[in-house]
Image (cartoon, rainbow, N blue to C red; front, side, top):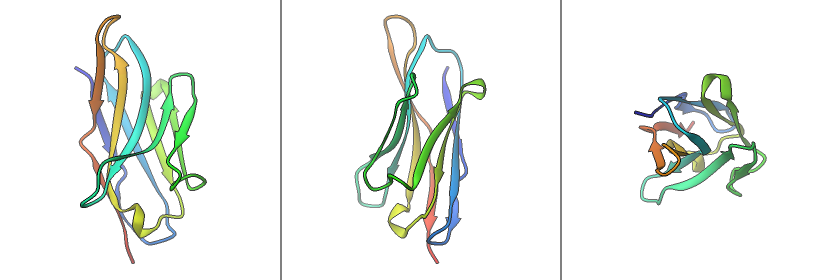
Length: 120
């Protein structure tokens, strides 16, 4: 069974930084992509940043230049470095894995979420 465990959320002042981590465990056939999503109160869940198996990254316009997604393949971990945080970044952040369980079955796994609160 594939699981994702997130960490690194918390309370930070505007202008501050946080780094989120998402560690994957379990066996898969092929990794397609991993990404970070967020959901603020009363809003839909949105993609924040993603990284494909080949290393290509993409970001939401609202976080470009402030957030960086990276991965450590040896540790099966993906990170989200968040700088210059604003109150608008306050949300529950979720990690998502897009993979193939075997050559025929797709697999999507979500983490449990970690709360990021940006407030003075």
